[in-house]
Image (cartoon, rainbow over all chains, first blue to last red; front, side):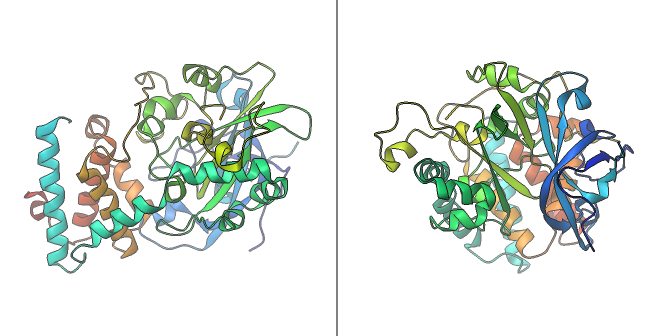
Length: 91
Length: 201
Length: 94
């Protein structure tokens, strides 16, 4: 499967509050950020946490402005996210 | 849940589970001790200090380190393979970036305690604490100040949340006035906090 | 449905405390728990994500009262019971 995103792409994270194990931190739900780079391909942790194996999916470093996440702050936060958590954000 | 009594109780409980697993053929006798010794012989902050000192003295190595840290550290006989499987190492460099802005990086795992443990050994307890994990992502400037690291407003801070499969290490900026030092002496300047980003070096 | 481990951005935890000259482990049993978890994952009894998930499923009051490696040990026992390796009773007798 081709990777869905490339460095510089604007993406929005999933906003649903899923039940069960996930690696999308709550503070980064429903936020818009920029893809920094591909960080490899790995089975989705949400699936593996249920004891099942899964196909590797692309994982990206995604940079968010602190103000986007917390409403304040001049720093940025880079979160490592599976493509399953991301949708394209159109400008 | 601390103190000598609680500690001896949990020691006995852990030993019990180990013997139960040995009896069921799921652990080999002596396996745990061997693993503990192997791990102690491998992971250490000194490995990180060696990598940093080499990067400070060899710009071509620094470039390779930032592009593909797993390959670069193998040049020093080090690897990220000491754990359950080889993990991707991502090294982020403090200093002036391409756009002329000075950047400082700091590492956290807000969801658990991910850390390049195969390379650097166990992380400090403060790194695993809710106190650090909850706050550094939201107000890194204040947290760094508590660690005694006061950064000018002009320095841009990036917090790296180890939320998936990569493990991060910071490449600190080489301190001024260290031109005459050997690679070994330079390595002696590097602290574990410097490799996490809660100290300048 | 955020879980207790998902603390990024939360307020109200205790101040950050550094321990000078902190040892790699604070007691032998911590090193044993660390090594035991690695051994079980390598044997495929469970995977690392199941291990994280098990910690997150601990009752919140137990999770917050436990030290770091106490959480690990509680999660190991939970998974060994759930995977049918041993019963909770067998695992508890120390």
